[in-house]
Length: 267
Image 1 (tube, rainbow, N blue to C red):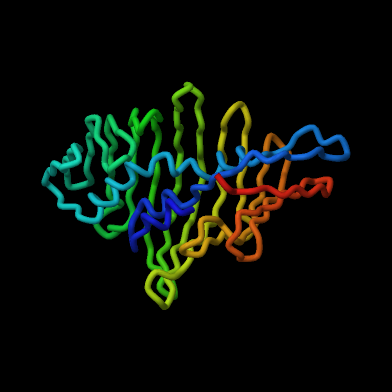
Image 2: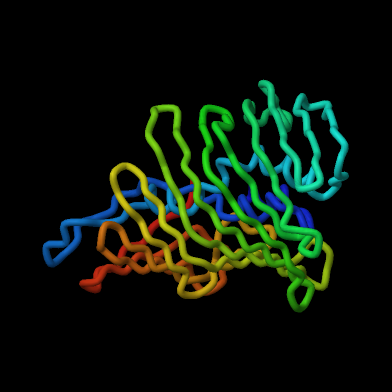
């Protein structure tokens, strides 16, 4: 989560798109009772929650260009990417481009289409063989931004994406994530909440995610400290409880037979 809060800016797109960058340890998971033949480990939880982080380098560029969009113009950035604007959006081309110092190298292109004249805060992004580091991105995202109550910003993201990793394995994600940035009364304070339902396919497994109680992370905390996620792996449903609001790295899994298991979210 520290990645998110170092980069978060009000109304910044990729702050929402990288909202769940969890790192999980591989502690001993113990033995389950009652003949349970499947289980969920920390690595799998990490997989279903951090796919957005893999696109964050490209999302940084989208944020900048969308915020400062000027129809009918083209722009060449010092970081080696080029944007061509039209009346309906823009296309960004990367040529071995490193957007941030020590960041991932990008190659290929993506296209952003505006939501419409009366819907300036809704748009879609199409990735077509975009390479971010050693990951290839394909698919689409539809993004809408809204101002919520009490100094909050709501990001609604509908994704249908596939990611091909360096070892040629493929992770796909389809569904809806709603993240809300709630700004505190004092500068630099606030929290991020996450809701939604989505499906991830990876390593021959299918994972269905249903956020039963919003996940919450306070600004300045490296971990989600509150919320309940229902995770179904190939028909096995497990509840993942991230706690009661304390800033710690601990989560608890509850299996259908009542077995509980504590996990760590540390690197």
